[in-house]
Length: 522
Image 1 (cartoon, rainbow, N blue to C red):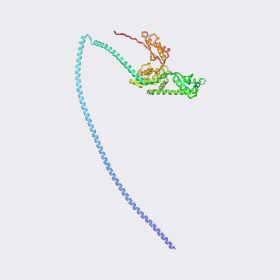
Image 2: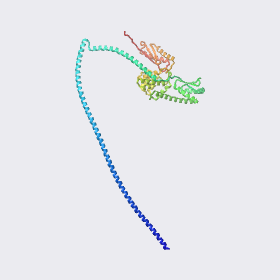
Image 3: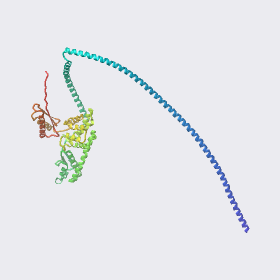
Image 4: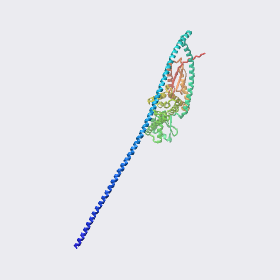
């Protein structure tokens, strides 16, 4: 039993030993096989690497040869281009050298020709000098013979001839001057009519009416009592703050605002309309509304000035002058709105300047500003012409614009054509039908009184009221009024006019003292 078991154990051990030996043999065989495979693969990889290196070297050699060929071709092309450029430049230099040589040859020929001509001229000059000397000698002999025959010296004969020629030329010159003056006057009148007609046709302005009252419409008559307030405190507050009289009468559903300052009247109108619309009317509310209305009217004034500049096409005016231009919207003269009048004058002056070929922008600018003094003439003493010129100087306007403002009523002499055009445009705008209105009877009466005042002084021969009553021209008798007395008489006439007449603006008194001598050739 033990033997059998030992025999089995020996068999198992042998089996295990055989398996181990087989495994080891298999491992050894596998290792040998893998080694042979790896060696074979390494040999193949080395072969492939050698092949790749060989191919790369061959390819590099081929590319190198190709690059060398291309470089040689590029160098060959560059050499050819350089040769062509060099050849062209040499040809151009050759042509220029030939031209220079040809010009030098031409100059040499011209110099030779000029030298020949100079020699000829010198010879001719010599002959002329000899001829002139002979002529002078002959002239002296002839003059001496003439003096001997006429028994007059040369200076005496020249004096007689010059006197006779001067007398004849004076007569001819006077006739020619008279003819030219008549011709120029006719042409100037025709040209002036043409220019004015073109300017008037191109400019059309609205007809406006002067007023010193404004009407505010009320929703009902009950509102009148609220406007008056308890014991009249509301109406007094409004009148005190605005400086305008409120007229509350039997006119149905309306209140009348009366005042000679149109700006204050407009402020009062705006404030009252807002108070009526709001319904709350008491002194504190009135003060608030008047303050707001004042700012609103000031903004309207500025906008009106800017719109006027835009309408005329003038720019660069000082902001303070723009505000003054806007104030002219609330200023009238004989029923004509001064702002509309200024715009119309600017357009007329611009059109006439364009027709005459002078500075259009200067004419428009001066036309727009010519009545700027009327914006503050109720605040500053003096005529609006002087006030306007001072304002223009203060805000650094062009000296030609200042002259046009000062000269548009003839107070000073116009120094430019544009100033004359502004004065003409102002007269056209004021004189056109419907522009201004005044009672015909009052107008004629004022002119008649103006002439009567001047004629009442001793030594006055006759007088005429001109420029719509803005100027009186007085002709005095020269044998009774001398130059010094004329100065005194002008002063007396002005003082009498100031004392007895009421008139807008100013009246210019011009005294004319002249002596005429008339004789007739029979």
